[in-house]
Image 1 (cartoon, helix red, strand yellow):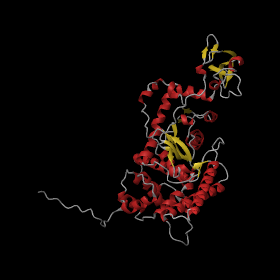
Image 2 (image 1 turned 180 degrees about the vertical axis):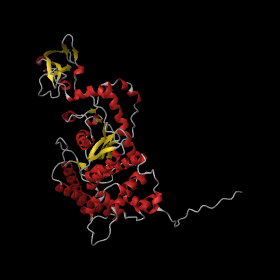
Image 3 (image 1 turned 90 degrees about the horizontal axis):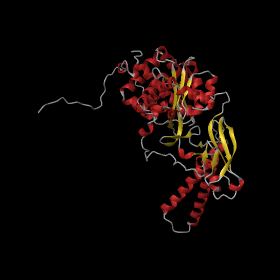
Image 4 (image 1 turned 45 degrees about the vertical axis):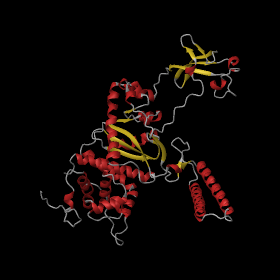
Length: 508
C-alpha cells in the first residue's frame, strides 16, 4: 500500500510577510497602493481631537482599505469584517494585523458621509488619467434595493392614528376581560400571556403616538402628493419591482461607455425615476463635453426632463414606453417572454372596463356617422376639435334617446347628473407649427443613427449592476437614512471603479 506524508492542518504560528500577500495585479494590491500613495485622506483628521491627549486612533486609510476589500468580497456585516481581520490573511495584511473591533468599522462606515464624495472624485480623476473615461456616452440607470426598514410599518399619519386607536381599544378590551376573569380560576400560563399581550399592544400604541408627535408633517413626493411614511426609516420609500413591492432605496449610476467607469452614483428614497434624471445629469456635467450623449431608459422619460435637456443643449436619447413597439427589430419579442412565475408575479389582474368605451361605438369615418351600443344615432357636434394637440371628431347623444335608455349605468360614469353621452374619435395631431419635446425625442431615437447609439446603453450600464449585485453580493442596503445609504452605494461603486483600475494593470 502506498505511503503518503501526513498533512497537518491544525492551527499554528507561521512567520508571514504581510506586504507580500498583496500580489500585483489584484484588487487588493491596487487598493493598497491607491490609499497609501494617491488618495488625500487629510479630511479625516478633523474627526479626531487626540493631538495631545487621548488614545491613538486607527488610521482611516487602514479602515478604508479593509471596508472596501470586504465589500468587494460581499462582506457587509461589521462583525464579519472583524472576524475576517483575525482569520483571513489578506485582511490581516491590509489591516496590519490590528483587528479593530466591529463597532469601529460600523462607526466608520455610518459616519463617512462628507468624506466619501471627495474620495469618489479622486478615484475618477485617476481613472481619467489612465484613459478609462471616453466621454462619448453616459448611460444613466438605477436599481431598486430593499433597505433596513420594515414594510409593515409604512403608512400615512391617518393610517398610524387609526392603528394606534385600534391597539389602544384592543388593549382596553383585553384589560377589562382580564379583570373580569380575576375572580375565576384561570390557568397561570394563560393569565401571564394575556398580560403580555396587553403590555405589547400598549407599548406599540405608545411608540406610534410618540412617532406621530415627533413627525407632525406628512411626507410628500416631488409633486407635493402625500406619500407613505415609514416608522423604521422615514427616508426610504415603498416601490414596485419585478419581485413585488419593497421598502427601500433606488441606487442610480451614470456609467461611461468606454470601460464602464461609474462617473456618478447617488441613492434616493423614491421609486420615481423621472425625478432622478436631472440631478444625475447636473452632477455629471463637469465630466461632460458638448458632444457627450446622455442615454436613459423609459423610466426617466418625461416632458419636463426632455425640456430641461433641450434647454441645456445636451445631446440625449431617452426612450419612451412605445419605443420597441415602433422598432421592427422587436416585432417578435412577445414569443420570447417567459410565462409569469406564480411565486413572484405580484401584478394586479387587469381590470375590465366597467363602462362603454369609444371602441364599443359603431363609428364610420367616411360617412361621418356614429351609433351607440343601444343602436341610437349620435349627432356630430365637432369635426376639428383640438384636445391637447390631437384632432378629433366629437359626437353627442340626443336627450330623447339617452334619457330613457336602459344602458345609462354602463354608458355614463355619473348617470344621475350627466344627461347625454359624448364620445371622441381621434385622427391626428394638430398642425400648430411646433413640435413637442416628446415628438422630437421620438424622431431622434427612431432614426437609424439614434437606434445604433441607444443600443449601446444596455451593454454599458447593465453589466455594472450585474457586477455590483451578483458578484459583490449587494442585495439590500444595511444602513438607515438617505445619507448613510448613499454612502454605502458610493462605496460599492468605488469598489467597481478600483476593480477596473486593477484589471488595467494599475500600479503593478
